Length: 427
Image 1: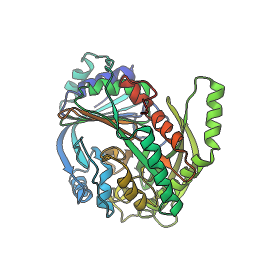
Image 2 (image 1 turned 30 degrees about the vertical axis):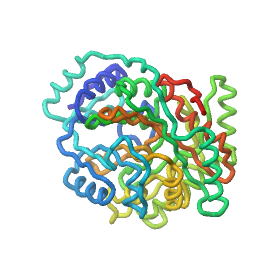
Image 3 (image 1 turned 45 degrees about the horizontal axis):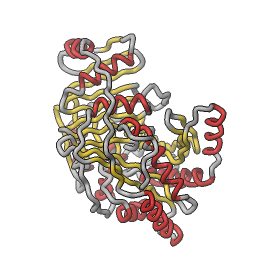
Image 4 (image 1 turned 45 degrees about the vertical axis):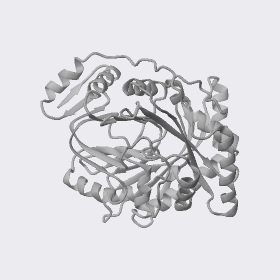
């Protein structure tokens, strides 16, 4: 069923509020960013008529079977710790969220929005349309301040960056993504309201609200991990961040500074090389190329340096294998990839879980699109545990104090919706 709506923004809000009443939900919103590779503006997958939950071991094999048995729309997430399946690695850091490493479901109801056109797929489609268009719009409420705790003090973070740079000096790695967790115990929140506020404060092209069995993902990601369009694979790693400024002249200067900053250029090109290498495992020979290097994209909170790497998918590589061959994404690991992941397991203090993973969909035409789970709140409502990670690239030339400030800059919108000062206490 296809219908036309006049006010898309209000329609999306009502549809999300209605969909959030269901036990399983995946809401994907591009926030009207102009993306040549997007199939839709918004996708809402509601209810699970079939589902797959798996942990690292044979999760990708299970996903391949699940996908074969369900060739239509399938949405879900993959956690970072599937690295232990793709490589000989382990995860021993603490985990208080208890999300599975992989979860996908076949929706009972699917709503897609493109422009002013809304398509509804499901039983009793007219009743569905009437149900959520007649539902009351509940505005997001302000979250009372939450008592957040860091896993690292600023001094500990700076000291750890120094240790990581010693590995770089020795030649063990040459770039890595070092991440830290902020968390709150015994905390009650309204996840939908939090997401609505986050999406208003920091609208991004890969925003996601995911609900499953009392577990919530509230994501304001600007980054695409991997997409397939026909026979073409597209990866768009982000490396390089600059703050925004209300003064237009200063804001333009900050863009130029980012565009010409040696450290930001260095980390971006190193990750582009890593992504190119990852894509060769799925690509037709000679088809891997960098479509755009050092592109600048501007978001409400930050400027980002984004590169685009593409290839033609080999005929003998399945869609699931194409994802597996590049997972986890290079922008969240480092290079050499395996060494960087081993070291970060040693120096980080909590399991990344869904953070640094991917959320997205497989479509009936066998295309797919997955984001990078960053700028994201994770919440286990049963344990009342709230968590978010932030990270930055550590290179030989990285300044630890600046990297700490970059982490706080990336967390600015999250801290604000949680009622925190935009500059987090650094003790």
